[in-house]
Image (cartoon, rainbow, N blue to C red; front, side):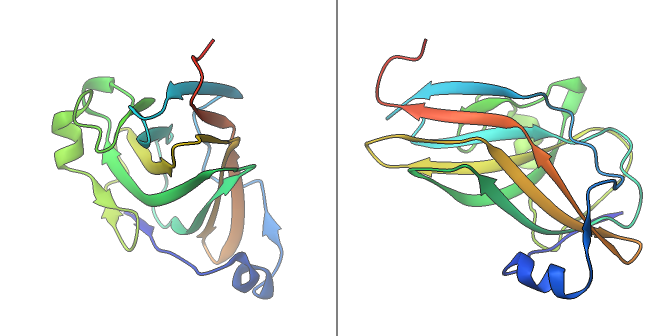
Length: 164
């Protein structure tokens, strides 16, 4: 089972020892950016694909935006990727693309999920009328007593101008 939990800050992680980047959690994304118009996506669901073969014992401690301006994370969830359909971007909640999967989504706080199959981390990204962006997310987690960090490089721009 993968266990997800929150941590108020990475300061506590640092106090426990150094944070490593060579852990078992590999995010299945590439360095790319998605653009969506505001107000249609002022409350957006951004999908971060998790690897299909997560080992038992991963504990997610915190998930933080990287390079963010004008946006906030309004929640983080984990949902199964049914029929190999992976979420990229939808309005929040993502019932337009993944209604059956979203019904089985759980908040990323203290959730336990099976380690078989594919899962998506769903970020609720909110913005105001002026739009905003983020360059990715930093995921701090523990595994077998060690602290790790990985970064998703999937960026999001919520734009008041037409996306090009």
